Amino acid sequence: MTAVYGHHAAAQTFRADDPVIRQMWTVGMEQSQTEPLAQILMDLIGPRLAGSPNLDAANDWALDKFEEWGVPARKEQYGTWDGWQFGITHVDLIAPRVQTLEAEVLAWSPSTGGPMEGDVVIVPEFPSEVAATQWLPSVEGKIVLLSAPEPMCRAPHELETNATPQTVERLGQLRRELQQSYRQRLMPFGGRNAAQRFADAGAAGIISSSWSGGWGVNKVFSAPTRDIPSVDLSCEDYGLVFRMAENDQRPRIRMNIEAEDLGEVPQFNVIAELRGTELPDEYVLLGAHLDSWHAGTGATDNGTGSIMMMEAMRILKATYPNPRRTIMVGLWGPEEMGLIGSGAFREDHPEVMEGLQAAFNQDNGTWRIERIEAQGLLYAGQHIARWVSLVPDDIAQHITLEFPGGQNNAGSDHISFLCTGAPSFRLQAAYDEYRQYTWHTNRDTYDKIVFDDLKNNATLAAMLAYAASEDPERVPRDRAALPIDPRTGEPRQWVRCFPPRRSAGGR
Image (cartoon, rainbow, N blue to C red; front, top):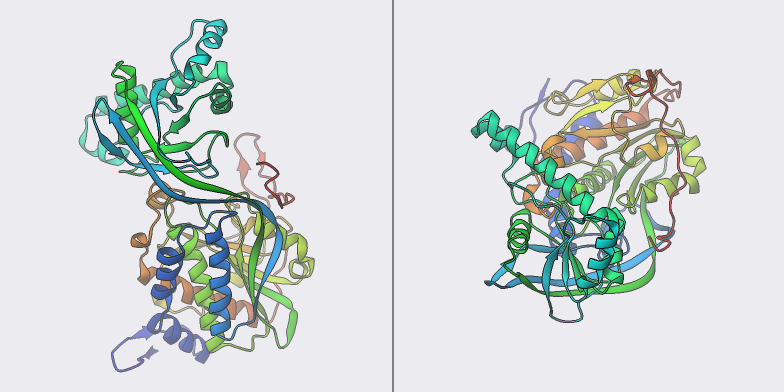
């Protein structure tokens, strides 16, 4: 059957004669609000690091949007985190020549207190522990390079396409040797804790580089010490400065970092809810984490997931305002710090876990949903297949269903509920390019969003929530045997619940 909406031939083949599904298509695909939502969240609010004022602003903005749509919503405090806000970051090479460098301040780094200069040093190789100890005082007033350099900053797939196999192998071997060598150099100072040793010895700053393997892309996380300023340099610029230092060309850096420690601040989940009319104590839960890392604007990790679920709730309110079961949206607090918001919700709402019909979480990128796995639940596939059978072909044709599934990705908020045995599913989009280019990187920005896919995903989420809410049966919680763990030769163990970390505790 073909339906045409509006004044143009927007043909769509529906699998079932369901008026709610048809209306959801119209509201979600033809009246999508994903672009204005994304523009506010990514451009105006920006990155949403745990403990930052931006995350607070995002929470309040989401509440305002739900209120505008007539959806009851609330903030639930689950704990606190270390507050931090950053401003301008400017890093320049000022000798032996002048060049502005591409840099990102690392989270929770202190300020420089105005422009600060220092000579750059690399950690040398030491013949003994005694020699390392004797060298340590020389870092006073210096800026220490904490990472090995990359031999080449070309994306690996480009190298593999255009270089000879011998070149690929040689560069791979050189990279491994550089990484191992620099790790060994840092061992006398505590290895991963070396930055603190350098800070204690009077170093002026730390520079590191965490290349993602993509063109111009670095992964940017938290500072290795809170005592001295720390920045990440791009792969190219880090290599430049390292080579100069290695060749005794005496590079000197000027850094100006604005950052403020805000002390301990409250952290929240945002919960929106359409109360069920027949089975109010059974729940369908749509989830995504609202926090992000700070170097980009958190567009695909996880602004797109958050907008997807907000937009799904807007669609539901417009087309299915009186659901059979209660439908909730959870915009989770800091997933990036360890699934904290969703884990706290699990602990704080045992009634939702007990009555959970299905949870759907989305947390990777902007491409179309391409896989739904039953997450090791023996009979959940029957229900998922029935729900997806209602979804129009234009959306459903891209989706692979995997039953019973092997819990193939255990790093996102769906695990916070699945660990109890509750039916909790990950709406999986394409992963490899996301992982390389936008996951936790300085390139995770608005321009990476594919809005055709985002409105597709939001409409899908609304349709799945509707189908799960109307399902005449509860989803069983029987567990299938998981795939063999190659490390043990035994079936993989069911994911475990861990207590959420409700405060930074000095991190």
